[in-house]
Image (cartoon, rainbow, N blue to C red; front, side, top):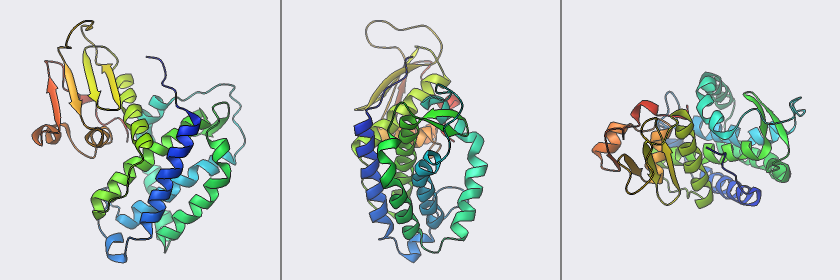
Amino acid sequence: MPSRTYDPAKVRKALTAQVEALAGAAHTIGAEQRALPSGLPGWDVHHLLVHIALQIDAVPRLLARPEPAATKAEVDLSTWARSTVTRAEKLDEDTRTEAARTPDAAARIDEAVEQLEPVLESAVRPDLLLPHPFGAMRALDFTVTRLVELVVHTDDLNRATRAAVPLDRTALAATVRLLADAVAAKAPGRSVELRIPPFAVTQCVAGPRHTRGTPPNVVETDPLTWLRLATGRTTWADARKRRVLTASGDRADLSAHLPVLG
């Protein structure tokens, strides 16, 4: 499957919108809410907010480092998504350390936003390579991964605090598509059609290829349910039970391939 392309101007606009929404919301969350469980193991909402700050200023941090020796990208977006689990422990450790020394998570997010703003032009350059821990990665692609992180954690924050932080439509669309592409890369094939209207349709899972008419194996769900399935926030069985996911056909069970983002 060919790599999906993302428009730099749209990515920049979406990142700015999602960052601004989170920064504004962080200042409305009181001490009692910051102490609530975030839904992520061992993290309260304070940890989650600090982690969000770290995801924002990851862009200026990588841009400040020397370009890698590689002459072309070594890591694409699907590979990034499927590799995040290998750094889960390190990210957890970094978040706990930063949270312990951060008295004001909202101010920490403001600081991250301040560092991001001057480098936004470079952040969406498709020709610039960044020294990501997984290998050389295009700056534009890395910035798309920030959309994914911020959309996923905005949803975490909303569920933990019952807030209503808006999800930028372009950021949500990019997140849904990237996670759909990741499951297609993890389970390559054309026997199952995965539909996440209105943002994505893809085929995955090895088996007989469908070419005409209604596919015999179809999975369909909404964007928020998909990102929760793809990131392990909910389970296949729970989504089926709540009737927010439909799956028809003998091969239309993707539970063995989920989550795709650690």
